[in-house]
Image (cartoon, rainbow, N blue to C red):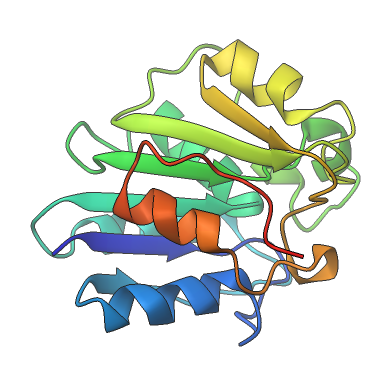
Length: 191
């Protein structure tokens, strides 16, 4: 059994059709432990509150832990690492999905404080990044903004947008495959 922590982004109220819900249901059906919390004030999040909530969820069950962080929660993860909220051993594997760039985040007062932390980071566990090549929330490209500067293994999916419901990401078999086998390639959802 593996313990999974799935973290949503800004303005995400965990809609049932989202790939995160789909993934949580499939992992539970396979007997895994899944934590998929509704983070506080998704429309106007407070970074300090979300950092505290993240720490509480990381203090959960023993065993291998896999973290999947989408959008603003990917930035939350980077802040948690930069501030020492995340420690070695908190995660065996981490998938950062469609993090928004600073140029976009600072345009929204509700999430401006989530802008990526400056400087170098040593990411705990095996970390991967997946993003669309046409993500409107990261127009500079996730590889250039996050992958290369932070030394993160990055996969770019053509035409995947923000990897959310608006981009057609309800079911996403490749993310389930990655959860079960960390070497699986992250590909587009079937059309």
